[in-house]
Amino acid sequence: MQKVLNQTGRRIKSLSSDEIKLDKQIKKVLACKPILSRILLEVVEECEGMTPEEVERCIEGEVLVARLFVEPGFTNSEIIAGENQEDFELGEGLVTYDIRTSLIIPNKGGESERHYIKILIDVEAQKDDTPGYPISLRAMFYCSRMVSSQLGTEFDNRTSDKEKYGNLKKVYSIWICTETAQKRANTIEKLSINREFLVGRHDDEERYDLMTAIIINISKTHNTGGTDNELICMLTDLLNEDMSADDKIDILENRYHIPMTEEIKEEVDEMLAYTANIKKQGEAKGRADGMAEGISEGQIKLIAATKDARAGLSYEDLVAKYGEETAKNALLMK
Image 1 (cartoon, rainbow, N blue to C red):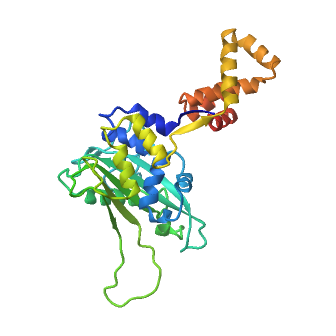
Image 2: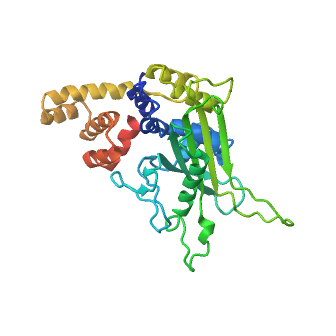
Image 3: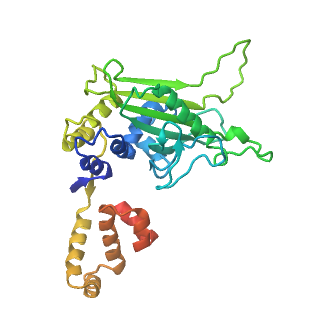
């Protein structure tokens, strides 16, 4: 079987060594589900006991990179989606969440009638860990915005809605500081809401653990300081600008078991080569020859769609060009 780089491998390969620590570039790599799932497995307590592959399957839909905006104030439209829209926050300029997604995971306890729970996730790549204010406070602010923005999306406060605030989803804001001074490096911090009884106590199980901020401090000098934490070691290797992209790909795949390549079915490659040959003789003749050789027009269409999928054509573009069924099959075959 022939092997080629998968999407994660291609993204790492596309970054030059002097780009890997740039916030706008590293977030593209962190958003790759095989890498994102490792981060979530380490710091999201609801993922405890799961495998990276199970966590990856729980990531809901598309991972949004710099497409949801942190809007100041408290309105009913607190999150604005769109590539070209901008929002201004006093003192911060134009602000987007680096990476936003959500997890739909099996409920391990608590509200037994709910088989799955939804958790909202924000991941930020932060180069400067001393920007003039505590990163921890900004992380908690982002948590607060993610909570308040659920009004009108995850819940409403109308009288007719019996659940109201009970439908609020837990949020995580995860900050990866990529160039931390060694005295703070190789640490993972957690800030969360805790309950404390000031007078008396009772055993009622109330929901209060609504916001968690995580700060992951990665050494500026790539010195892991003897830590054996796999996530810190993995991110240190990933962010090491002195290491080539090929070496990163090799280490991520062989040391951390993150898939960087995918097997290509030989028969599909042969069919791609065959149809490419046919195309040179003319599209109409190609279809006729293909049919004569036992390859249907639908198969030729699927092969062409698979080739476009491997070249990076989006699902939406594949649907527009080949139809929904062929697009889905092409993504499975690529």
